[in-house]
Image (cartoon, rainbow, N blue to C red; front, side):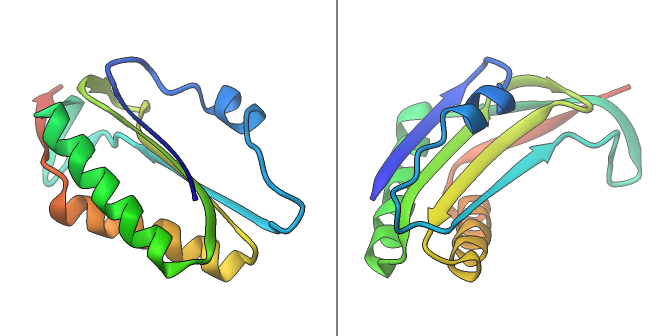
Length: 130
């Protein structure tokens, strides 16, 4: 399984990521998810979210998730970018793409990675009030 992981302060270039997609002839589904900062966190209006993490541990946990995903055997590639630092309302903080032979496998794998990421990857967020 091909993997790409980036934890970065830089804005996510979704158009560039989509243009760089690569799929073998046996793959029929590419699912991507873009997580965008909302203007409200709980009951408070916010201007941004400050994301922080201990990058080596976050990378380790992401690689563990990718190992588990690979053992499932239905995914050809996964690409994931998570921003750290201040991410303004309306900007993407997370981008993930899963390529698989079938759409159901791709959707399920994408959802699984996001759910597990939120459970085990040490990335913290602090709302910045507007």
